Every structure is written in structure tokens, then in C-alpha cells.
Image 1 (cartoon, rainbow over the protein chains, first blue to last red):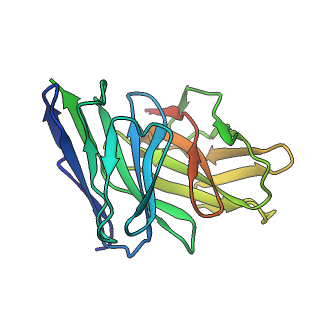
Image 2: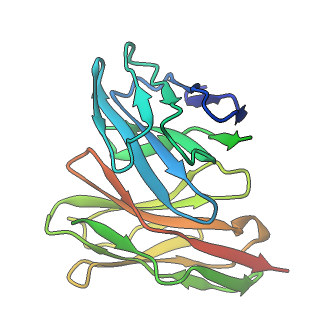
Image 3: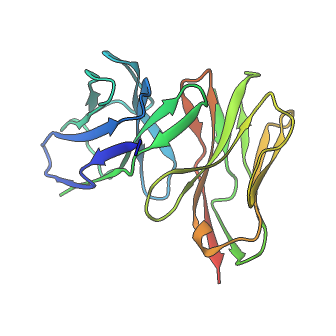
Length: 112
Length: 113
């Protein structure tokens, strides 16, 4: 089945640690996105990538980093510079033909 | 700036009744796509319905339909015969030039038995 997978589902981080969230898609989509969602809030764009080896900052990129070495993969690193990282992180990709965005199930990150 | 406003943070509806969620947006572009996404407690974002701005006919998808008023920049979602499984956060969104989505803050809908 085609789709987007994110791992882990739950992640706990100690203060001062960097953690990496995985996002993989087998939909053959060029564009991929990372969003942050705080409880009861909407989605805020962290980073996006239109093509392999290229990515752009979104509205809240500070304290985050990404890479796009393969079309299928778009990992997000939450660095120690992100002071309040507790949130749900959603990965998505876009079907260019239908302009429809597909989402992964999310990773819930909690700072201990 | 491109923005999406959902003026109803929370709504409730009795099972089998009809409910309408409102959405307004702001863009100077003429060609774009509009969407309603549903996020149930499982957190998985699911596409409910989509509308292409150049089409005047309102989109429908089973019990879900939209009222698209382009001049007013309004895109409301009507849910008919509400079911308990419709309980979720609903997000209105649009996409410009096939790149970035702009999401509204969401409306939390509770369907009551």
C-alpha cells in the first residue's frame, strides 16, 4: 500500500539532546513537508522540500534541520536550540497532479 | 499575506443532524485549490473534500458538501446526517501554485449521540 510512514510514534527527549524524526513515502511524490501541531492548534510549516537535495525554511524553522538525500525520505532533526519542542510532528507529501497533500500518522515528541 | 480563518473553535451537533463549518480565506491569486481535512483523535489527517477555484460547481462527497463563494472568499463545509465517527478537528486549507498549503486554526466538532 502506498503511503507515508513516520517513526517513532512517540519520542521522549531530554533537554539538550538532538533527536531525529523519520519520514518515508512510497508515493513517488517530489514535494515533502514537515509541520508542527501544538495541542488544539493548527499546523505550522517547519521545512519543505520540492526536490532531492533542496529544501526551504518554513514559518518556524529555528531549532530544526532537515535533509533530503533521497526522494523517499525527509528526516527532521529537532536540535537542542529548539527550546519548546513538545508537540505533534506531521510529515506530508503532495501529489502534484491533484494538488492533494497526504499526511503521515505523526510523531508525538515530549521533552522530559 | 495568505491566511485562512475558521471562526468557530468548537461546535457540536446531534447525531443524524446537519452542521456547517465556516471558513474564509484571503489571497490575491485567482487559481488555487481549497480543501477540508479531518483529524480524528487518532491524529491521522484525512482529506474530506477539495474544490478547484476555477470551478463554479460546489464539490460534494457523499454526506459532505461545500458552499464555495469565490467573490466572498468563503468555503464552508456542510456535513449531513452526522455520524459519531465525524467527531474530529476539521481544518480548512488552500494551496497556491502547487507548493505551499495554508491551514486554518481548525474547528473541533463533536457529534453527540
